[in-house]
Image 1 (tube, rainbow, N blue to C red):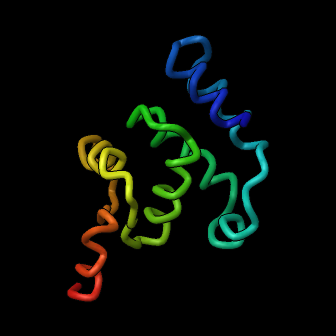
Image 2 (cartoon, rainbow, N blue to C red; image 1 turned 90 degrees about the vertical axis):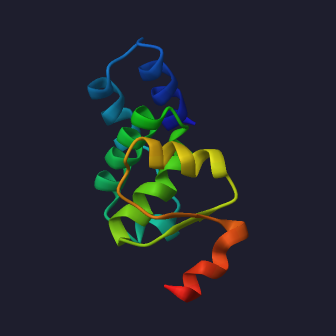
Image 3 (spheres, rainbow, N blue to C red; image 1 turned 135 degrees about the horizontal axis):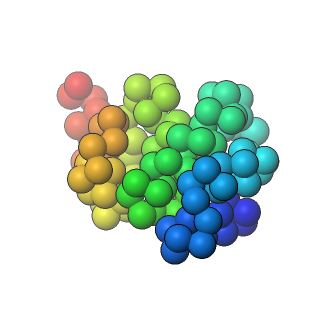
Length: 105
């Protein structure tokens, strides 16, 4: 979609992050995400995480949502969780295989 195109162009240096932001800001989010957190803030943060971690924007919507809620992010994509940790994104990522650890927190 439009967010992925903006992210790809920004990571390739074809446009700046500032040019990518209005593109991402104008895309429609699924209603379950929009109801959870204010959309423009979520979109901007997802793009920032995507550019920082070199990960697709659609993955980073989940990270931005978890970060905004101060909630753990459970994912089957352990490479994504490692990228978030490497870039010091402020959230607690848990691989799905270790989801039982949430009950211990």
